[in-house]
Image (cartoon, rainbow, N blue to C red; front, side, top):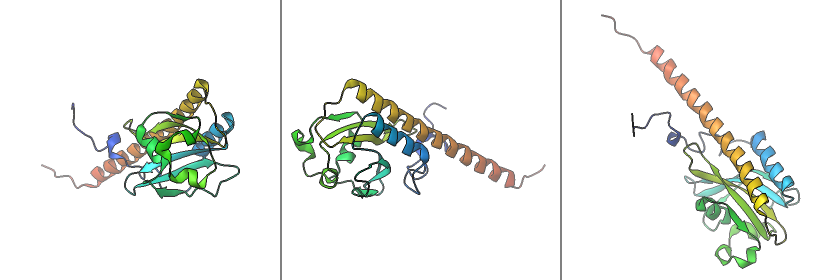
Length: 189
C-alpha cells in the first residue's frame, strides 16, 4: 500500500470540509483565541485561515475587545500581512511593525491599530499549514521566548481540533460508503 492514496486520506479534505470556511465560529476556537489574547496581554488575537480557492484570508475566530468590527471576516489574500505570515509556515515575531518594510501597505495595519505581532502556524490533517494563531499589540513589544512558546502551544491545540474535525469527517465518509455498499444488489450464484 506504500504510496497509494485513499479516499479517506488527509489530503482529501479542504477547509470547507472541515467547517473552517462556513457558519459561525466554533466555541473551541473562540476559547483558544480568547485565551491567547488574555494570557499574552494583547490588544487582539485571531485564528485566520488561508482560503486558497477564494484567494482570501478568513478570520475564523477573534478576540478584539476594542476594535472587533474593524477587520472583516474575509479579505483579499493579495496585500494581506496575515497571508504572508501563513505562507511562511513558521512562527513570526515582529517587535515593531514600522521596522519591517516588507509589510508596508498591508491591509491589516491599515484597519487595525497595532504595532507588534506574534504568530504561530496552525496545521491541517496532512501537516500542511492552513492558518495562523496571531496576537497583536498596540505598542511596540519585545516578545519573549516563553510568550512565543505559549502561543505555539495554543496553536497546537487549534491544530489538534482541526485534526479531530478531519477524523470525524473520515468516519462520516466511511459510514456513507459502507451504507452505499449495503444498498448495492448482490449477485448470487
